Length: 221
Image (cartoon, rainbow, N blue to C red; front, side):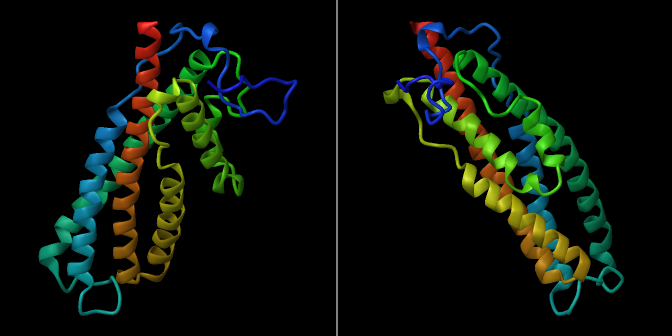
């Protein structure tokens, strides 16, 4: 097991507390609804990417709805559904990440955490710092979760880095595509959104599984 993080050693890994002090008190089963929502969003992004290619192929921009009325209605419906699903998924994401962060307090009761459970949500709203602080917060959740269980039970790290890289790149491409109305960029951005949704599901499932293993291991003890 890793050495507990303490004020006496500022360079110690900010990971786990004394395993003997660990308790399921306050621990809640990881949320899974966000994974289901991400799968729905992934499917909508795939449909949207396909429609963008069909609408834009043979043209120089994305302003082709008028010339292809047969695709205009389904495209509009998919865009609305994808937008609504994105907002709903963001809410579920916030609920998931705050619970995962709170569970760390039971898994590592003596650890000193850099991020509060709520800060895992509001860092996304802070200009400039939102470019990296949510990434650091997610790394804390993944690291502490893995170091809180026996090394032989520890799973591989969650794909936190790839998830954040896709999050940033997809956001940039979506902004460029909307500003330029270039259908190729919009199609790539929609494809990146698919990759982002898939990677996010892998990350959430990995962290959830780690926290479940910790709970199961404590119950066995």
